[in-house]
Image 1: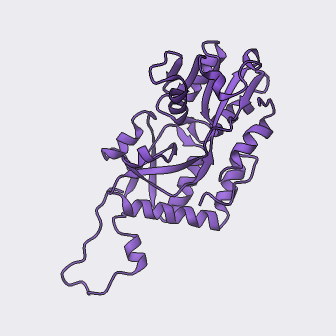
Image 2: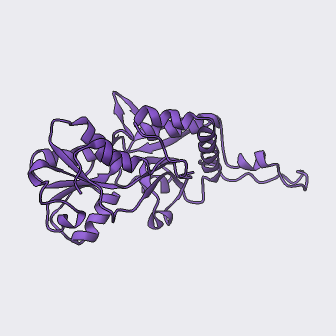
Image 3: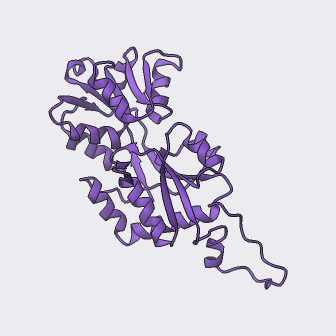
Length: 281
């Protein structure tokens, strides 16, 4: 059912949540005994290096530009996890379409873009442990509220999405890959502008971002919908497949640390009103 109250709709969605080197090889004079756990965890990690993070910084409140700096929930989580392991990062704004290929080619070391873990993406990159859970959300205007009451009602509607996202994928499943009613944009702000101008009847995107847009436009008479058919999605950071295990292990260790010491909860409270779910580790 459509819900005009942000707290009820996005609150339910948010309660779902919550390196470039090779592995070191022992020298011929090294003792035969196995390396310690701490030494193993540092394999392939260079704490003197600054690792490049490719991020689609157009996805408020998860990751977006504020002046010339990348900010947001995902940014703060990765930054805190990295600092706990003495890992240095540099964030570079990168278009979402092709961001995994960017990591795959070694142009960057980590991809941060509210990336949902999928079996298809696992074939291309390695993922960190999950750091957030979300689902898809539909948003429309008062004009279409009475006729769009479920995801199925978008079957023949003009709908905008961000290119190559989960919203794009599920809409293709509904309308067909060749549907001319799917309007793809490079960023979610552009997808929302298409709704504002009347070019589409609805937008489909991640609940974290759609819900934030809803909350920032209280006078726009917008309506949101989470369909029961929408699956839960786990966000994670992406790494070059099979080549950055040391960096990935360090970030995973950092995630565990900030979840255990309360830092993650503080970051979550800064960006969202609801508490993270204890699972999603």
